[in-house]
Length: 371
Length: 235
Ligand SMILES: Nc1ncnc2c1ncn2[C@@H]1O[C@H](COP(=O)(O)OP(=O)(O)OP(=O)(O)O)[C@@H](O)[C@H]1O
Ligand SMILES: [Mg+2]
Image (cartoon, rainbow over all chains, first blue to last red; front, side, top):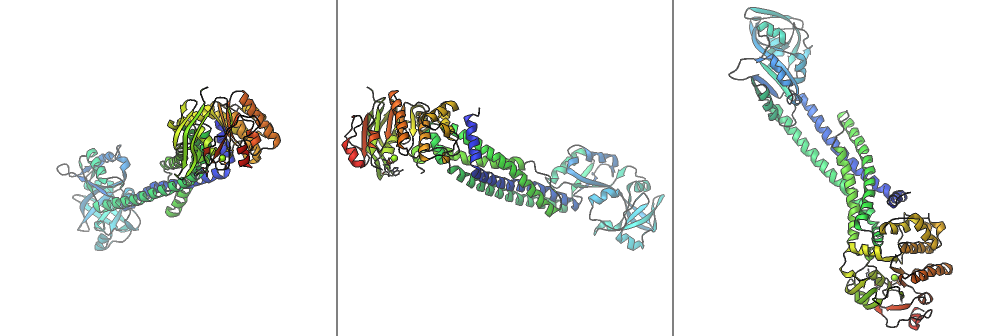
């Protein structure tokens, strides 16, 4: 047999379809805005941080003063330890040495080109990136000084050893790299006899959160390295991120308030219409808690259904916006679901319970008369 | 006998202007059946609301079953109503989304425990057994009034307060309802009901009459013979 509690609840939900639908709709709309704004907030932040990777390296590791003049290549494992790894996007090793080419002094830099592409994405290569140990990427300045063309063979000499490279492409960076020649790391180590040694490591670390913290971490895990921040890049990234953060935060808060207010207005109107009903229950001798429980359960049901519909809707909004702005989906924010549901259920509960409370505090006769 | 209901110099002012009850003093004994009469706006509903603890006097003494209603909190008033009184409202006040049966059960639910068989029986008593599953909007005014009566009686309250319980009834149903009141009276319930009909009022032990919030001194115990004053005023 159906209990009276369920009769009241199901009667109210099934026989007041119009009102219930309006309340569920208001909550769904409000929650969808909250969910969309929170999701976009999180998503945009991630997207911007992602795009900022293209700014390249923001940390450089050099041999620390007073220790060896080179870093050890095997110590690169220090960048993969727990707590550091997640903060880094990419890193590229470099070994620099002045060598003689066609009788002139030129800086020869050994590196790994695959890593360079992520750490220094702004490098522009005319021709093709070097492949193998005998290919070289020649800075534009060096190329014009030496009169080099693609496919030319150059001979580099360091002390007694000598190696030959083929020019695969030219490098344009707008920086000192245009005065250098880049070859494979192993080849340069072989030529200079510095097996397993490095002059520097360029690191591209995540800009969100303090870069200083990452640098401090690195100093601890790799004491032989002197960690320096490339401030121009790093400052710009962090400033941009924090400005975006503030902007997104304010928008989210405004949306939270606006939609909360909208839901509150609708729910309160719906609840106020039931003042007489609450007063009747009071007149029949129902305690405030008893009535509050009935109304709270109803509000909970409405809030839950509206909240879930709103979550789905908000999620679709966010993905649609992300798709049109970034051309890709965003990862659904985990915090948006509880935030959205909390707004929906919270406002539904608050507005219906405040009416129950108000009626319970007023002379029942007056409310019954419709005052 | 110790009176069940005592009002002493009860005044009820609305907004400091309208005086709905003006120094009303009244005692009603347990088991007594009292008819309240008087012109529209004379304060009959206000008087009933006082005794039902639905409203508070602006000043004066109000005791029901030994309980000082003036000093109660709203929560204690609700308990008082639950335990002591059955109410029949002038405007019925049925919950629109509950069936006739469920509306009766609602009073049981808040009182103790809902019992659909008992509620159906109460509806049968007022001749509505075949309307149990109807919503209030699907009932006539007289039918709604009878649902109200069934709801007021279901918990067998000590005091029954009825605001024009026969106002919307035809002669046949009026007889049915008056029969129920007579049974309740015989069973020892205290009845207070408002009526404009002197013949209905005449069935009570006593008629009290309100005029602009004041209780008229003339009261009657003559069975079936309402006081001349009341008759003249209403006509
Ligand atoms: N909330 C209120 N505010 C102001 N005046 C009120 C209020 N309620 C009732 N009154 C006034 O108090 C007086 C008594 O009202 P009451 O409802 O008790 O009359 P009544 O005798 O029941 O009339 P009726 O037979 O029409 O139901 C009336 O003059 C009415 O206008
Ligand atoms: Mg009245």
